[in-house]
Structures are given as structure tokens and as C-alpha cells.
Image (tube, rainbow, N blue to C red):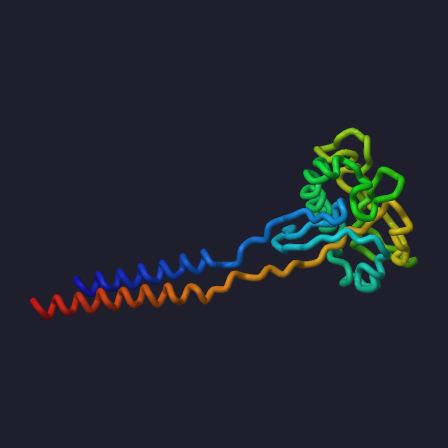
Length: 219
């Protein structure tokens, strides 16, 4: 009977260790809209299909922003479905910040869209095509257009597909800007802190076993 009780204690200790281990596993990164100079500049911790990305608005050419932009692997998403899903997820996160102060539905307060035209066109390439061109979904956000799904001036829905030159610098093509995705590195919470807890549990079980044996011997 005593041995059965002791075995139960070991099972309890093992279950406790598993629970503590899961409690100390890597945390899920928070999704945060980033700002710079009073403008929306991107998003960090955006999860898409189980992968966490940091997103930065980039005002340059595809060649500069996407590792040369000369092969499919240079692009973060290689199908139209995935690219539109990613761009939609980005817009879903940015929408509340866009609708609130200090942006207040003003596309010119989005990085890369600070010109005289009150519009901002987000572009995400997913395919390279002949003629030095790249294809990807584009979303135009304009000031003063009727609200669409909570995002002022978001059209079309879902995003349309654009075609532009890989070498064209979008800083000269206002109000166009690239939406640049890169996989985020999430640092796990160190697990070694579990082991002192495990050692304490084992010490307690050893003490209980010693007391049990001592009581048995005294009887």
C-alpha cells in the first residue's frame, strides 16, 4: 500500500513538471503597429498561417527591397492567394490605427505616401514575369472615400492585382509603397528555471519516502 502511494507521488511530480514546462514555453509575440515621425511604418508580430512576421513599409524598388527580386525565393509569398491573405492580415491590424488619432484616416500619414495626393497604394509582389516586371496584389487607401469594412477608402476588396517594373523606385511613384514581410525571430523564455522546481519536488518526495521508511521501521 505504501509503495502504491509513493508511486502516485512520482506520477504527480512528473505531471507537475510537465505543467511547469508548458507554462514556461515561448510566449506568442504581440502584434503591434509601428510608428515613426508621426507615420505608420509597419507591424511587428503578425501571425499568418502559423508563421510570425515583422512587416515594414518600404519606399524603393523591388530589386533593393527583395534581395535582388530576380527569383521566386526572393519573395516572401509566391502565390496570389497567400499574398492577398498576407496583405489582408496586415490591413486588418493597421485599420484601427489608421482610423484613430494621430493618423485620423489620412493616407499621407502612412510611410511612403506623404506626397500631395491623399492616397496610399500598398503593393506586395508574389510573382516575377517576363519583361522585368513583378506581379502582386495592390490596395488603394484614399482619403474621403466612403468607409468600406471599417477602413476608409479601402478598394477593391479583395485586393486587386498590379503589374510594375522591378527596378522602379516607388519613392518616385507616389503614392505607392511596398509592404515588406520578413519572418520574425521569437526568443523563447529560458527553460532551465524549471529544473530547480523539479529538484525541489524530488527532494520533497525523498523526504516523504524517508519518513515513511522510518515510521515503518519504528512500528
